[in-house]
Length: 395
Image (cartoon, rainbow, N blue to C red; front, side):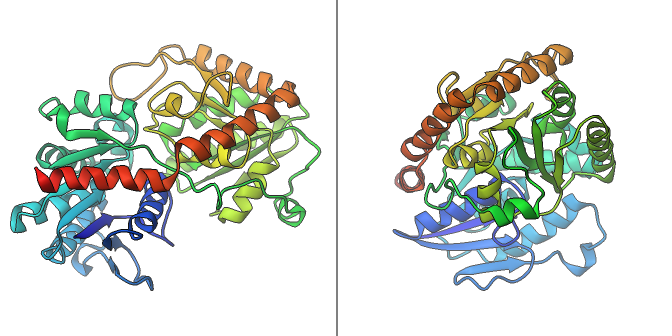
């Protein structure tokens, strides 16, 4: 059996949770099956890994058209696969074409849903309609769809009601607790200007509407003045969103000391150090299928304050490994809070509570690492994924 896995992101070109998921899944799967990887971007040195650049004629085209050009090239290379497994709309069309052309079973993993990310029209303009259509027809024709959480499964069946529920499976994201673990390195902390004596709240994520950064910046103004804030935030969807976030950080910095914004890529070692130096991690997302960043923080032994939306409640155990912040949201796909002021106030209150009791935060952090180890191990996640492959191939 040869599995051909298709993804836009693959190391070293990883900027989000989907890329992390794919890299770890491939590593785990290769222990038992033959896996070839097809990804976007520059050539990779890894064996059985093939990269594809945007065709020269489409270099200046809308990103959705450029993506389609890459998918066509990848589809041409899939004809000898036993099964194709694609990740995100960027790669789905390659799998769908291979399914049509070569009658190869196609499995899709849903890391997000285009209908629930309408703000992407700011990034893709008319290309958002194309990305949405590519996703829809890939999901509806796939032999199986894997959701990374039960919350995501519900969203998939709502967004695509023609899908047979029996074809939609849940396999969570995972974490390697040997790679992500409490790490002390004072030289790294000093390089980023982190004061190890201060209570600290940390955020990691892309600068995009779904991460709830507008609400987070407002909530952070309510924290005690001795609290240090680390914002590892980069890869903005648009220049306008970056400018909006930059202005918010500048306003926050004008009111208090200890605001550290890190816009560039941070290595895993450095992230482990920064997480270990923090008191609490915050995930203010208004849309989050699961949130690998939460697992990374938990594996480093710190509790998480997260929004009770999407798959986040399947990771954080409220009152045991962290705090869940309630949110009532509009039903138009944007995830916008019905009462933004209430959401901000509740987010700030949860952070204040987490930061005010170091012994409770430490206890929750220990429980968080234990939960990451016991419930989100990549070996078991690979086994569940292989079970989906087997059910497709035998059906």
